[in-house]
Image (cartoon, rainbow, N blue to C red; front, side, top):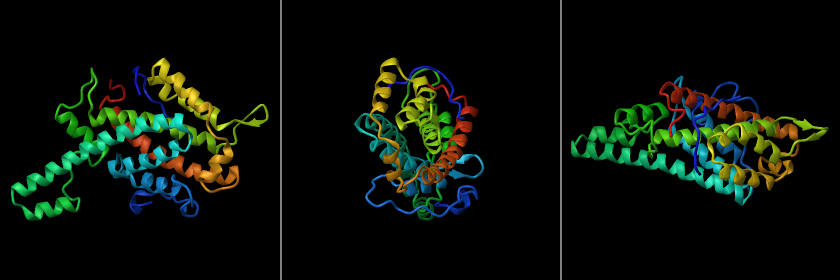
Length: 268
């Protein structure tokens, strides 16, 4: 999908230490039988991603996207086209991380430092693509980020994922609300369209925007989303979706701060 423009995004548990008390509100989510997308798995990865006070681990971050792609794929073939574009971007960062990991292991073997090699296999020897901030620092040091033209850097790819994450955050937040218009609940199609218009649409060409909005018109009704997260009512759905939205916001806020600190919110 083609990105254009230079507008700035504006945002309206696996590892116990990373999960806040707020995230733990409510009973643990179980698996939803018969569903490829599992909201419990998504929440687990989102809660595992924040680390330290201001960073995001890339492995659970990308795993969160794996589940969000499954979510988008359930919304119809047209929305599935968007998810495939996002999937290609997660693959870019994974390939960069794998290349870095292989290089670290090769260096350890060449130096015949068995203890160091063991640390690498246990994750103690960390590479450039361990977290958002480590990736930014390393790619800047290597001169891999170009602020004037397109490159396939991890930082540029992360920015595109970051923008898409805001879109889904706003959409899920809207689904959780009892939003109404003229006495009727607004459809998921309308909510997704509105979230898109104030996020991703700001960076897409006219043709891409029209194709995306056409895709949203075929989106399922609210009952479909209830079944997707194994609930029967709007109140039950709101409880689950709000937990997911809080977890997304935490990841988004940290990523936004890291990109903004390095003037990367407008990478071409």
